[in-house]
Amino acid sequence: MTANDDLKALIRTIPDFPKPGIQFRDITTLLLDPKGFATAIDRMAAATRGEVDLIAGIEARGFLFAAALAVPLNAGVLLIRKDGKLPGATIAEDYALEYGHDRIVMHEDALVPGARVLLVDDLIATGGTARAAVRLIRKAGGVVEQAQFLVDLPDLGGTEALRAEGLAVDSLLAFPGH
Ligand code: AMP
Image 1 (cartoon, protein in one colour):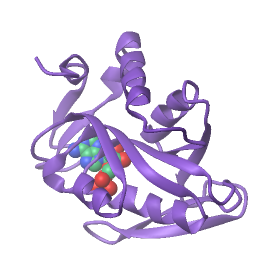
Image 2 (cartoon, rainbow, N blue to C red):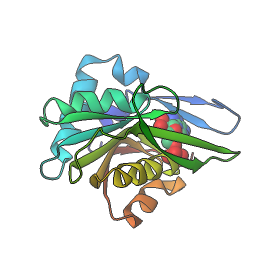
Image 3 (cartoon, rainbow, N blue to C red):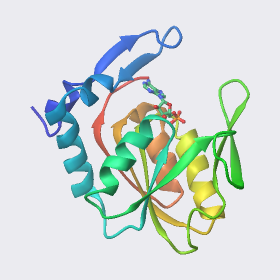
């Protein structure tokens, strides 16, 4: 038993979703467990380095963790969304997918330049989404020096790539493979 094995036991693996060869790490089972979700948030809050002004959550599962963490950390919640969902003027960042590309956006006035931002998502795989979010926050003038995830898939290199961008990266759990 190592640290966070209690939480790992609450994550369900669904093979071949959304396509053959992917082991989908399904966190909905952890969310359904009141003690499990609260414990995950407590441990992520404890891993936060210094004070932050905003917790940036990546749509959609990242919103759940960002919102829950913002309360004990006394921070606001910054929504990083898929394109076309935010009503105000936005800034955008594109990133490559295996086939094609995708776009994330945020409200252009969502943060005061110099605001300290903690980036949060449920899971980091290749890190493509998280790196695009870092570029977007920095473009808006935010200072993003740390990122947290519930789950890391280290073999896909996302954590390493984010660290190369100068961030401190913490995850509670890791699964081998992809
Ligand atoms: P990436 O940009 O490759 O780091 O992918 C991260 C996003 O895709 C996260 O928002 C995850 O929720 C989702 N994701 C990628 N791979 C998996 C997986 N094996 N199981 C569950 N979610 C995944």
